[in-house]
Length: 248
Ligand SMILES: NC(=O)c1ccc[n+]([C@@H]2O[C@H](COP(=O)([O-])OP(=O)(O)OC[C@H]3O[C@@H](n4cnc5c(N)ncnc54)[C@H](O)[C@@H]3O)[C@@H](O)[C@H]2O)c1
Image (tube, rainbow, N blue to C red; front, top):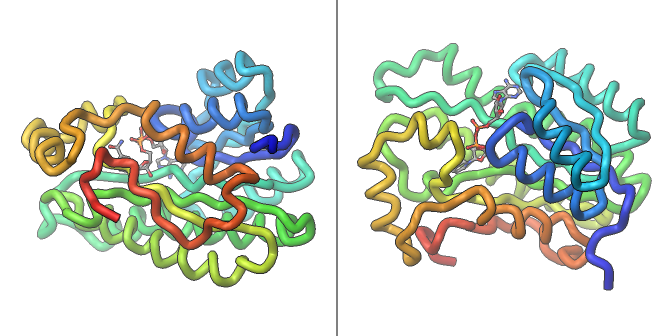
């Protein structure tokens, strides 16, 4: 059985760099056309998608802004005819002492990481329902199971994504739409390498069963599989791709 049909359209948020970029590249290799969403243009990712033999629409959007998210849904639907695969990957992940976390910052974290994921799923689901096929994948984080210090708002948003994923999996289960989460362990993207202090890298490696740092390429197979036809009977699940930090 062919796992991916060509000409499906996948929208990846946070596609300019890091995991979003490698997810977009892999979905292009799988035969999907891409909608690339980030704060600014995603030229580098578009290049990777084209090198994989596909094409991309590049739609900048600040996902913290609900009106902008509504516009994105309209633009993406008009341009593509409908999104088949939604990958809610973008995240705002500031590190700060929990007692310094202000309400406005917490609201922005929840808006980007969770609220936008809900609005995009709600906005794109009707076409998926019409077609009787859809895939929604939310990015969680293994760190939500064993939180490091300094990420209170981020951890709250990632656990909220699990609840959102489970609830939507129920609502959409009989429509041919699966909704799942991937929980990466600490993974060496540029942002993580820059922002995460050394002691956390050491601690996380110690907690894993595979004692090495996760790389972006470790995540792409899981994403590709969950978005494929082969994963049609898998929904409401959190797939930990974390070297065995959290045991199933
Ligand atoms: N790298 C890790 O160690 C790790 C571990 C666990 C979970 N994750 C999750 O994986 C996903 C990707 O992580 P990453 O390391 O590639 O992060 P990253 O910071 O490299 O990329 C996140 C992307 O989201 C975009 N973004 C942020 N705010 C936005 C907004 N308001 N509107 C639109 N786009 C916005 C950024 O511009 C960036 O391109 C995130 O959901 C993250 O929580 C990552």
